[in-house]
Length: 97
Image (cartoon, rainbow, N blue to C red; front, top):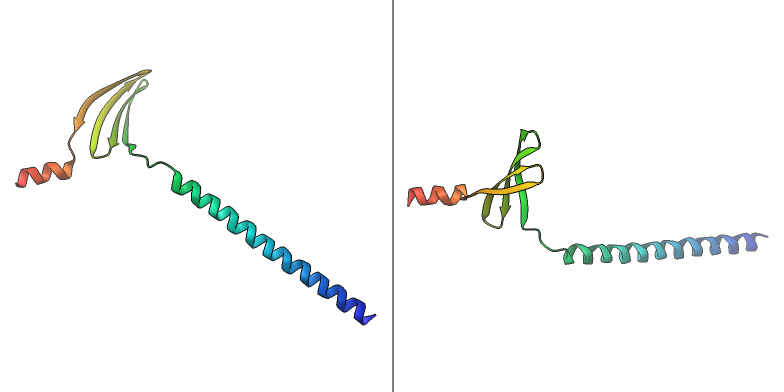
């Protein structure tokens, strides 16, 4: 009887061990797929850095694209580029030089 219980315990331990190995294999596989998705995602260069609500569905947006900054006005479904702003750090360097 002891031999049969010992054999059952050994089979249970073996099953648990295989289950853990299987779990690790699945985790590694999912991790590698996630890493591939993150690495293949395109770099976003367009960013709204600030917004200012003017009321009545009107806003000012400061949009950055690379090293450019655009001041954009919105009203309802209308968009307009109001100005292209210079980078404050670059402007400061020109004042000194």
